[in-house]
Image 1 (cartoon, rainbow over the protein chains, first blue to last red):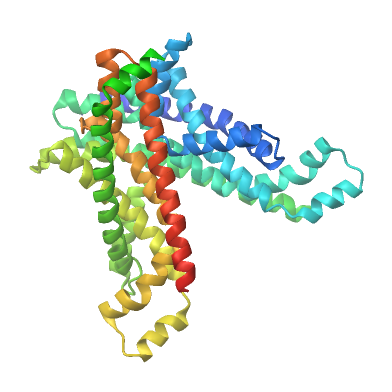
Image 2 (image 1 turned 120 degrees about the horizontal axis):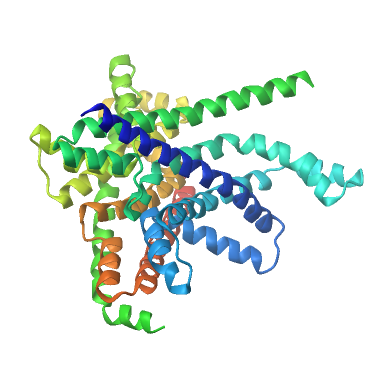
Length: 215
Length: 217
């Protein structure tokens, strides 16, 4: 393996990380929106969100990626591999995020909500100042866990020809006829990325705890 | 709609893939459950070297994406002189990977087991393997049932990755159907629905087993 080979796998890591981050950026708020739809029991939309979550959660990412990339052009939406990959990861992670947010909302103490109501807080204000800060704090570990699962599901987009870590490692292995070293290097990179997410979560948790203590 | 007619006409292809997926999932799930249950013994061992070795295995598996692990087994091991065909490599990857996850969730359930139960087992003369098999394992498995269900669904989803090493499972067959007759929408939707049916069935079965476990308690 030459320095160039290592570099190409690191380049793949940039693709993995950036695609995962974009999907998280879209997926977490979409999940919150869907969870709120389910929480407020909006007729019809509630059931639609439940079916969406159930199907996407059980759909393998590879299959979803192939469906989006090959089937959407039939309805006139033609996506390049990278947007199709990001859409796949976003849809998949948003379904899991919905369940995380929803369980936080279900476990939210009702009396606090009623207290805010009795102070005459409006709906939006109540949500932003009373509900949201607490469910964010409570859901953070589960959300980060889902983010690491997303990073581990991200090689699925390699079937669309996107060169992320796994595919970059395959290429190097196919060229040098010695696949073990690039795979080991890829493994190290994945571990580093997962570790970075977990570490960030710890830092955020400590900050939140300090902010809570100083108040 | 004519697309769906084409898929219906060639449904045998999809059904063969579905059958293969079910076989792969059944073998891997059984293997991962049994090996995962056995893995809890070293994970809960009082000897530190044994425990750290088992923990290292679990942690390593939790860091590797499944696809990379499949490649590692299928393309990486031949350079060490171990060669598998794609089917055995795929099933072995599913079993080894999910054994770590099953082992970890069963270990968590074991460490929540009340001490009195094990002490009572000791008092009745159970020890070693019989203690594990008769006293520890049943409540551990029953209380971990919902998590085992989630992991079974994960096995179903992971099995789709095996399309990349050309195992003729559901996604692979849907892909070949779509490339032959150019029916991408209908063939992948058919695959997604079959995956969904499989997972909903697993959820239902786990729910049923859970009720049985509640009755037994």
